Length: 150
Image 1 (cartoon, rainbow, N blue to C red):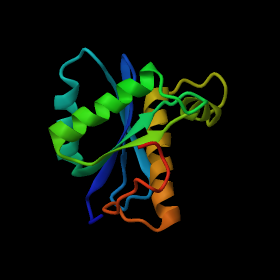
Image 2: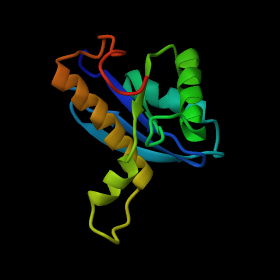
Image 3: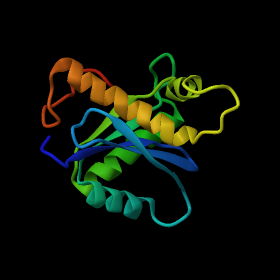
């Protein structure tokens, strides 16, 4: 990954979509926002983020069931990944996000008010970034065989 290129992380939901972006070194996930569906075109919003942040890859949370089967939410995430890859002509990676929301809640004191969707997107993206670093992979390396969900 060259300087200024980034990776976009997405925690997809029916109503709320958490968004995060990597830093320019590709080491740290930073929260962006939670997009509320129905307030304009989601695809146009993602296009804008891709342009503004010079995004070269997208990582989408893949909410598999605990038995690794694909339920309705995982199917929806897979379809979103396919659509974004087709429309934006960028590589899109599905990343196993089981328990990320629970982990996000555990990271903060009880009763604190946080943007859980954005934080979950940060956890998803950070997991993917850490896996790349642990394996010594660059962003251009094919990662199909290196874990994650797809």
